[in-house]
Image (cartoon, rainbow, N blue to C red):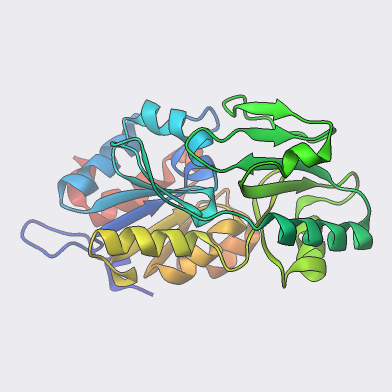
Length: 282
């Protein structure tokens, strides 16, 4: 889609991209939630050349914050699938879109009417929003502040960023498809990772949040290259001028990518940035 994907920026040349957007899990981060020295250097070379780096993640701010702090990240971060725009350097939530709780309840009713009981978790809104876990819901990330609930009313007692759903029998792709069929006119449905089928405010995507962040920086989609690994990155690829899927990416994302790089364990982001910003390879 973009000549900038093939031609690096030499000294004095115009930047191939002014905005580098990266997902976190499965993309920028290795499985142990760290970033390799090579990838850090490649991102630093891109930003040193004048490009902006924006993290775009499905994680809510409270769930992403400890990772951003570990990375020393100071810029804008698009969190919660685009619902939250967070300034990491200022520890400030700039914008936040919540899920209409009545609409979400109706969506759950419609989904369960089609496929049976769901296991639920809910992310509360805000800088310190907890993740509430219903009975049977499984999530492996130990960095998530979590609270168990037994009374369903507790889940609806405060504003929510999103809901997580799981099913005893259906896999992630089948569950996402079923939820879309049953309630796609009420809520957004996305698959963000293993065991992470999410219900979001209708129309909200990573592209929504990334476009908002880009406007704050005076940039547009034509300035952007985006890296990702899951179906929730598809809208971001549709928005950015060039979309790069990791080798470990979901087949649905690879199908719409402009380019496929190495995996997150093999410095796939660095492979591309070193080509585009030659100083990254020095």
